[in-house]
Image 1: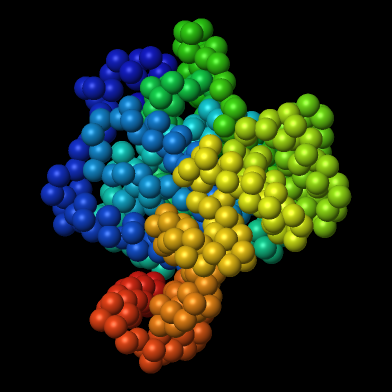
Image 2: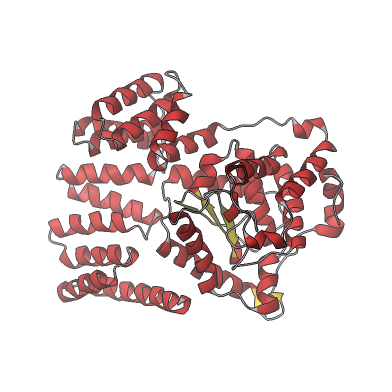
Length: 471
């Protein structure tokens, strides 16, 4: 049934379309526990295959958008954990168990937070309406291998010169349109319909979902890309846009004129472009901010640092800090720049300490602060900070590497070797992981050290089992 307006959907949803609650089973023998287990294993596979952006400024922002949407839903059995994949694709998808993945390229190219929320609302609707679980139960044709294959296929397609735009996304607004889920026309209509309802209920401008479609169309279809084969089974993009526009026409002005609050969105966009985007394109973006926008100046500084233009970078960071001396993000990036350029370590430390006072949860900044302490000879202080960081990102190979080296420098050999083993394990270098493990075993003396080795072996075995099942 096609809704004539979102307001009608709001009135009818309690009777006809309320998302079902899951108890013992979702569909027949495919239980909620089965779906959750599959989702957790898939998350391990994605993290082992593609780079994940762990920066809390980025991750916490995207998670907050998801949480804002989910907060308005009826009680759900899912927590909707979110990961941001470092990839140029304009893409997002929901995996079994409500695990949400967003590609950095999507955040970088959209125009408003409401557009990002529109995409995420659509993906969340696929979960709440049981499109994923239903597909599994009807055929049990989805394996971890096929799930991972779709994600890897996106990367391979782009590496080979494929489109970076909407083609990857429009089948399900997700990477699963073809091989993973092959959502039906009705499923896509359902996700569009509920997606816009969730968007409105979360307080966003309802133009967001259609706006995201328009960006995808301009980025991909407008560039002359061929429509992928799998889209032949899904609603035409233009038809979906037309439906969304028709629904918008019937909405009250109070909804259509909702203010776009893009302050955090713009900061995260700037950070992603500065650190990961094409330099020439990023320069054009930051040039629009002029010399009075501290975030644009920060972006210029980060870009200059990437290009080894140290003097230019220093000037941009100084200008940004003069305009915004208490901006935690700018302070953090200025501190990281001062440290990595090999300049004034005391200045780097001052910037990072102030940034962490303003944003204590910024474990990305804390990691660089730990390295400064390590370099300054404060091993105990550095190691405490490394442990704090690992509580947030327990599978970050770089943090394990620095922590392991720091431990080795003070004679804690078994513990140090073990963290180097973790670094290799999470870096997918099994040969090195096994070598470091043997060293950790041979130097383990205390009961605590021997238990730590056993814990490592248990985690490694669980990870190996997942990887083996996916082959």
